[in-house]
Image 1 (cartoon, one colour):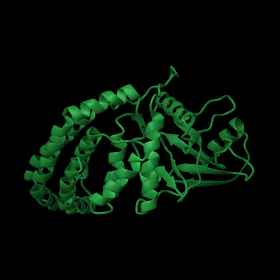
Image 2: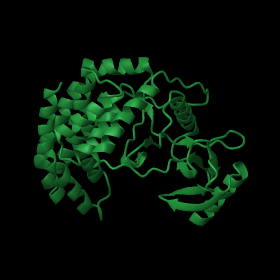
Image 3: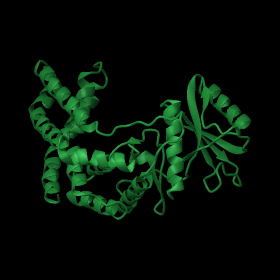
Image 4: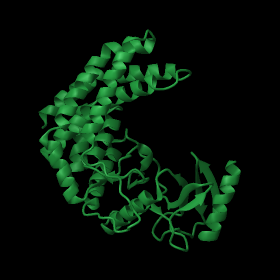
Length: 343
């Protein structure tokens, strides 16, 4: 089946692009086409083309394409770019699925344990947020994902779900129930405080400012989507981008790093300082950032997945993940106390 899929994709590439390639590599359900050394799909870009299935509608895909072009116009060019065919179309259909070809940088995936890379990444995200300001989609066929103002409601729903799961656990007698129950109260208290802060004026002001500025966030800043080689940082896979306050991206980036350094406040300050070099943070930003980091996202996600999935082989894995989330509890709480001092 994969061989047939690869054959269909390569036929489309030959017909619609006509660019010679020397090698094809399959990875994680995608296909890398290595162009001949003297060829570049887009002038100034790499000679590596990625074929990948897109999980968003074509209206949102057109929005992402327009947004990435806007970033380039604003001077931020360290991104992947959709490759238009001879008819200027950026997507094609294979077996009723939507696919795109992208010109992909050759840098390796980033290393969040590398302090120099972390500094470069934070500065880069600050630059992207600045470059995104003022963006307005002009294509009538495109549609943005608008997440502005939705965080408090989303947090409240997850907090309510956590309370419901606690009641469900009280009826259980399994190891997961017995591990979950004694700690649920602590995490529910954190979630309650986080929601309270998010319902304050600071968040409202940030949303109003983001609407005025036209802010767009990447919304999926995993290490796989940030490529770095020690010299340059590239950001790729913008398909989840949305209208959102800039602190959302920074919160996700810091959370990923904190879980690797036992919630070290010094590491977080280092990240904030480097973001600040490109894009200044207000007190409102920091207050809302702390609230986002306060919410027990990992604890909720593990419990939600466990109690709402079919039991079986994954139970042992979920138990281990739950213990990992609980193990972070004290360091996370100390981090929040220290963070409060810098507000």
